Length: 557
Image (tube, rainbow, N blue to C red; front, side, top):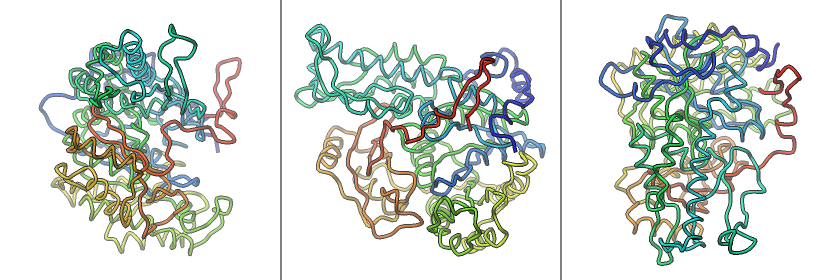
């Protein structure tokens, strides 16, 4: 079989204006970025009119074996389109960091991809560059304010705004800058985050228009004074210029699937929280233009779906009509204790043991959040009928339908069983099920963290590092206690320990740091060893990525 990039490079793409026409958009509504990419005005997401149905795709806890959440999303959208349903696919925008880290790409796989694949995985339309530039503009203006007499009385030891870049580079996590004498600024400890972990990305994803974007940017708390008062980006004077840098980026990006169906790709996995979801603007635009919108939130549903529902949906007034939970036989075998090297061998008992992970995610989505759920078994050639039957039994016991997805090998045609199952779920649940949020916004920050830990992760409680506990108390005093919480932890486990697979119990969540994202409108709670500036692995994907003399890229996957 051809590689992902070979399949993508052999695709017959339509001019993007023809793809836009399928959505009823005129030439005046789209801003072409070359032949196969365009931006659509974010203003089209506003106004009254019929709204489509939102289908959320999420997944079990990820493993090295892969789950295929994006692949499933693409294939499901193609299948619905093939069945005559007016459907829009809405995905998040990949960053360069993951591209050159472990994984070579993030545009689906096999015959269920979005194209142009190389563009999407590399520089695309420049949105992430704009976000990084806006972030670093604020960083430069903070240090310049300190250098120019420090009129805001900023304590250089309490500058909480980090610089960022779109590349995994552990060397930049903790640095000292401003060295070399008075002319070079004030020496202080500093550090970099990966661009998609920037609060600017979170703001970008949640903003509804340019004014909302500017207001949110103005509220960013970037430092504290010597007497402990917060200093905002608005007080620094940076919000207007930051908005100017993001003016074009806020317009969602239109591309196409391998089957020439429309797809919006916009916004990244903000705050390094494994949210993996597109912008509010993109989702709302999709709901305006189509009868069905397929979107995703991942990695695992305990991270992606929880934040999608408790933060994004709460703020944006969105409500999924159905949730698709993606699982694979291979991943469940891994959760059942099988090593990656041995996953090709049939092992019914390991699937049964690992299925506790699937069962817990189903329970969280169905009974916790109160949403209609179906399970997609993302098919691999090594899967046996006996192994898949275990998954079907788990779904039957949980009272949710289950469908085989063969989109990797067959594209939209391989997604029709899943599409029919989703349509059946929608037909059986014609009324919107209001989301049962994990916590009430009126609760204290500590109570919100406790609610997520106990209800979603099934922890016995939460343990705080002294600095984290102190920060929570300070944020309550400063008036930020009514914000939602955004918990950053490993995606590989329900706990903050990546080695605890399956469905661990009787553990405590360990909170080591708390950060305020006042502009975005949430409090980031960092658990365990999760990094907002990841490092590269022993064998980075970059070692396998190449470009020949003709400009043909290889190695993205």
